Length: 416
Image (cartoon, rainbow, N blue to C red; front, side, top):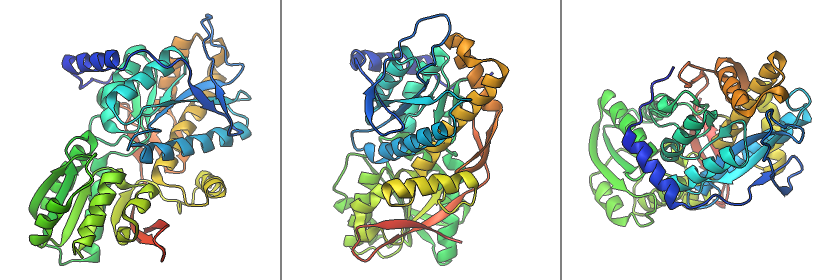
């Protein structure tokens, strides 16, 4: 059994948030394999679970707010996974049916989405939410209801420890972030002085900056300044000017795509010419439209690469390129992997005990045990889980953003 790290106060806070966000929406939408939107009506209350119309898996990502820049990439990856696995026969002949709920960008939105998926849509498990901060608020409700949750973009410390039913396919920041600092030093061995920026209202950014700052000190570098901002900020002129006057050799930014992209742009506009490392919250092609030409050269550590040679990734990449005419980003790859874990765990469980004969609570519990014990060949590489629900992954990368001449498109070029 995992030991939860949550306090009674946190549960109380979550309960208050749930009350504040009011009643659940009357409808949820499911985007099927044909891309059309339909109303989900999974309201079975029979002793066994009615799966004749498809096995419902909840997708709780931000589709609105400033967090949508990340959440929409998760939605894209999940939709591709739905079509991909249903085209291959679903779960031993039964299709999966993804049920989407918008978490928006705050904790209340994530709690509301989880409650709707669990109680109204009767899903067997959930992929999400988008932010680690949302996970700490919403995952306890899934834990209490004994519904499996797989985080596809939650990398802050402590997420799998929320409970026995919480796992993630998104590698922790403690493993990924240090790679970018080492890559920057390889590009410029003369780096001595570092400036750090982080979004103080985002739990992931606070967790990530701690890792970055520890790595900087471990490498014998000097931290000149630590600047705080909000994910809702757009004007960084004063902070950027003060930082540039200190003459750092390297700037490290932990935030989200909109705020972090604007910070990069303003640093460059004010004359900063040194290396910039971006954290995982900026690990999205959506950032290209924010900092545009000024994105050029930004370094970022990644847990996914379109260049990975695994067979599933080749097929995922081809499907993504065909639909979106661009390389798949990390959050799409991780969302695909999360859906894949459910599909393969359901297949394995169905061979042991026909899942259509199991009451929903029993199906959820057995599915959770099955997915934690499996091994999966995903677009992320070969992965498995520790007993706590932490992902075990071997393949990691560091990329450098390169922009095209008109600064409208960019790509993450893997550094060898």
